[in-house]
Image (tube, rainbow, N blue to C red):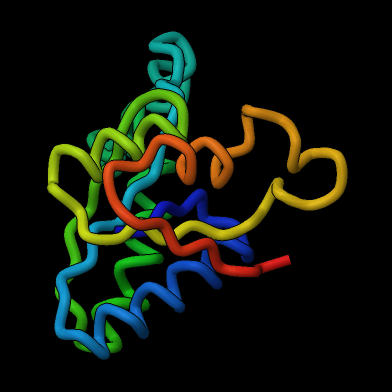
Length: 142
């Protein structure tokens, strides 16, 4: 499984995870966390959207788009993929899905692990590497 936030560095981690999954014939779980969009903002966006698109505006529309972009990379390589959007903290989302799906490997980018930031407990790769229920591969993306 691999976590993504849609950033360039996360896309590098996704590409590496796709290559690995393709090489061993594995299915890939794509995880992305989101904070729900306030209902007031959703209502306003729906009012301003064309009627035929209003149904698509929801609390996790941004994360769904990020996951679909990552899934396209996997599908292009012939890798079976499952999308796992999760509300909340990114590291917790990755850890929860890894545990629920009995993941063999978690792939994350090293974003946030350079300089003084690498000592902060809030860093996603740092937290994942210390609490994962399986092996973790940290891709050097920065």
